[in-house]
Image (cartoon, rainbow, N blue to C red; front, side):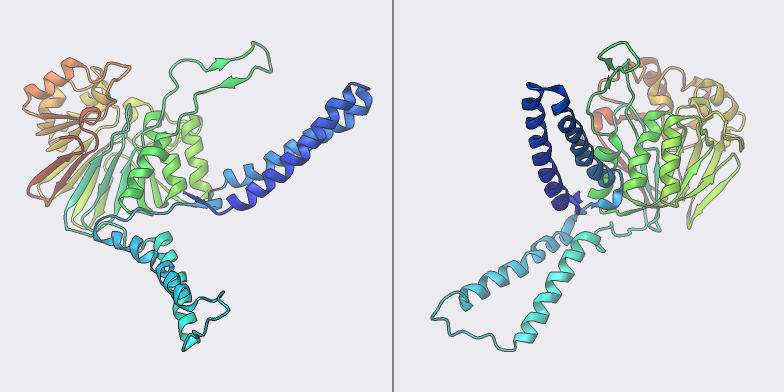
Length: 420
């Protein structure tokens, strides 16, 4: 990430730190004589401190103050080499020209042509680095589903054969236990670990590594922190066409934070319900749950997760959010809609989900469990793993294999894992 305001802010901070330091020193010395004499300098120190912090805060809280330099991969990495070509040309030219030598007799012929060419190169190649028009993966006619390793959470990137992208959940961090409190009064200071958000350090990094600057759709299965928090960073870092939800629980703090970002960036919000079908040329998504609820007070907990089935050719993927046995029992009333080759196992493999009847209805060949390497909740539960294995499904855990990538041409499945 490159901050376009960093030079200005460093000058700003340096200047006001100097002023604040002088005011503080005078306040300390004058306080030895009289508190009244020291008071103006104490206030001046506070004012300088406020000014010192105010300007950087404006830039930090607004995404326009910085931009992300993309990562090129494959043969297109040659752009990085070409980018430094002007530096090489300039070095050779200066060595030949020797402009600071008193005896230099070298004169550049066609100087306008040289200057024009140099200006073109200096402008064009930085633009290639910043806007990366060639960095997005080439289309291969396949459907790609990448289950990201976001620890105790869910996130999956779907790349459709036509090139459109859908990010299902974005992972997130959960605060286990109370924060440290320094003192028990109304002015108590709260301290939380300075941990970089999963949406920034994992999900966004992965998307940048893939060469994306735009994600067509983001979808939150429900409003739990380990599913929705990461989408906040993604919505800030990427151009997003629309956000998809089953429920819009405005009282939920994480959802409200995401909603605010979507509104500020003018991202369209689309509500989904059971029976909806989304088409992406030859691929489609069927929404199996929940039923419609337009209320802003609607519940968006585990059992109201969006459940969707992704279909391309004769291959099917089932995404179940964190649904539990109560919702599974409703879904198996229409078992034909549950059959899938690959399932994202509900609720990280908790024994609150994956009932025998549900597993039998899905008939999956692969069961992907999105879970941390050492889950604090004991996920996945041994009984759940055994149930899926006994059904004939191969278990793939993100905590053990890293990112799990599944691709299909509509007839066959290809599985790749970051850790073999």
